Length: 121
View 1 (cartoon, rainbow, N blue to C red):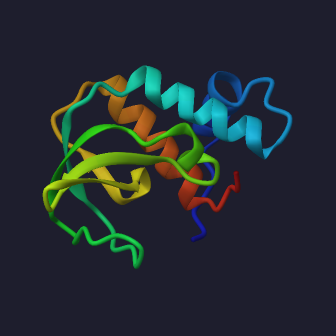
View 2: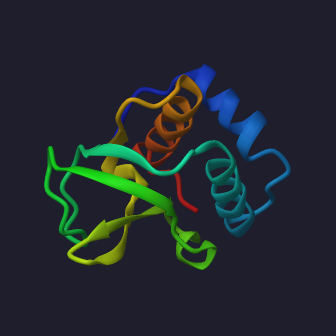
């Protein structure tokens, strides 16, 4: 997906999240720990996009209960939700938090920006 670059977001990501990351593995771990530190679970979120690998439907409201395991976040960031009497990991890029503080909203928006620009981990 091609979107126009936002220099403010690019600088924030480079300076606050990816600082000192030398390779994709370090970038993934920086994103993981950054999001884990800022996101306050549980929180309600709305599905904003369909993913073939996820059963969540657009507009569906879910409750994010935690970050997925670090090992599961080496190429994309995932959060856990309760789904069908189980815990399921879904892409963070698939949801938009509802009624959260500005810091959480910005952190998730930064991840959406990163993912939507096709930056690889």
